[in-house]
Image (cartoon, rainbow, N blue to C red; front, top):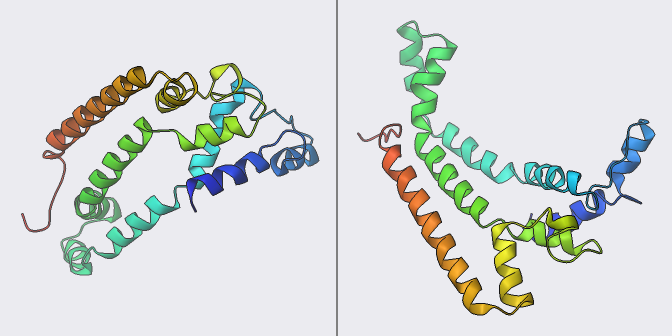
Length: 186
């Protein structure tokens, strides 16, 4: 599901007056927080929404698991390996390239966290950044400087800094991955 569509859906689900989650909590006689209005609950709201979006990652891992040859498990079973030994010595190394891919993509998207916070703060009566700027991530602050405060030079410098930080972190992960990645042909 596209990020904008799922964000709009979650703005509706988390609405303090008519949101389905608060209706369910009220039915169970539990406290009904103001998810998008109270700064204490804005980040848990984003976490709930992002947990909803984990399906793509799960599908990629499922495809990787299906690509592991069954003969490896059969050979390990003949050698007397138990379930934990098979998991740590066959499954984890076999899906390690996919884990590297998911790690890199997750890091890059975390550094560029924008759409969800923008949609959540736009869905309320607050300005971009949410109540008390509780959803003001780096990318959202970059957007504010560029398109609200019209400081294009400052925003451009911020974008370059973001690029350099993401590139450095990615290179570090790639360099350290040589110790824990196993490719089948090696």
